[in-house]
Picture: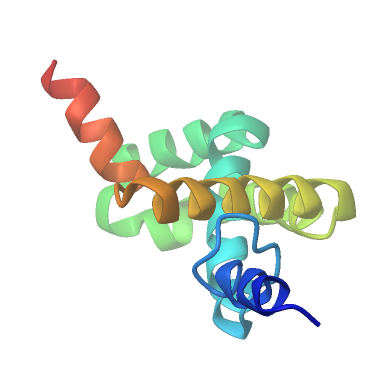
Length: 118
């Protein structure tokens, strides 16, 4: 084994750009967070809007008055959380964002903030 092959092995380690492995915290926390964000914005936007409207109208009684809307929202989100293709898509997007962060050192939120300033 040549010294360069050993070096290449460690070069793409945890901070390498092509590292496709996930740590336990990323599997249990970060990917589900990504799934939640995408499901709320893209997949269940109608249910989120209905629940938000109901909550604004009901005020403090939201817990009691918005049960039906909450149940619809939960069932929609659960449907997408259990979808294997959707989970794989979110995992790929997370890996892409992580790779971009490792390459540039700028998070997605920082990029959005910079874009809004310009």
